[in-house]
Length: 393
Image (spheres, rainbow, N blue to C red):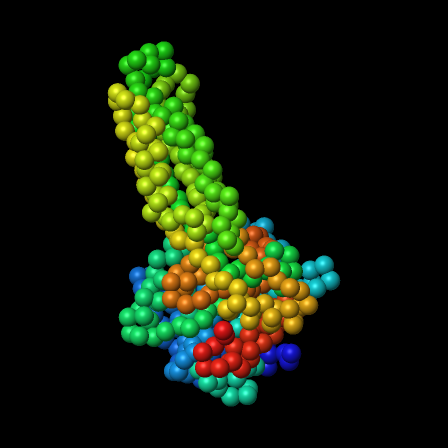
């Protein structure tokens, strides 16, 4: 495979130097547009709420191969703790490797730059019989309300279709070529709040203690084994993430107790089914005559999805193996991503850089890893548009 004619490292540096802490694009989308327009991409800003999004497309015909990603980043934290400035995009040695340092180097400005460079390389032989598009948001690290989801809805409303999509999230645990994400588990967050009656610990009959009620509800929820796994998925899991009473003394029965929990669930469940189960179980833990109430707040961040082998993932896997010599694992592990929205519109899989140092102080990526990813993306475009008009089988 030939190296991209555009240097992904230089573009990644320019993107990192834009301090685009979610949802502020801070000029990063301008930088990306400046790289794409000379290649023939029509660039459109799509703003929803306070979030800027970029839809860039070359061509009008199908199939439309889309790359999706984000240029927003999490805050750098204590900047004094960084070895190099978080938005300096400096290149320096790291254990014998030339390395790009900065917030977003891995998650995921490096991958965005790699795909832009791949487009430059691929288009040297002319435009494809079809379309290439990029859907880039500044809302992936935030609530995920006014980003990819809204752009997809707007595109569908005007009849614009994506046929296949590759998301550039950092999917590899240790080495480039380890893993492709072919799906993700769903995610549900719940808050249980019990309100009782405050009183003296020596006179419990004059109070209504919310803490035992909350503990009974949590025990009932934890007692259920959700499942043993589903095709392509690990078992679903429920994790209690917080229990709060806020009681500074030992002789007062508190008025309120609260807990939070998260469920990562596979295709044996829907968010609605789990929501109903949590609500029924929580209310069932309230004893008769309890002089208080149980309240639940439940938010479903995404449903599980899976792109089965034999479609896009096989094509990407072949390109990964050709570049790295590794046979990537097809996995649905990990957290959620914007692929959960895209799965409602087109087959989608995820492949990007190694996930080490993401969201950490001293986030950094070796230059050769970024350039290797660009070569893989170039090969994906070559193989995709070498197929018939329907794209990959």
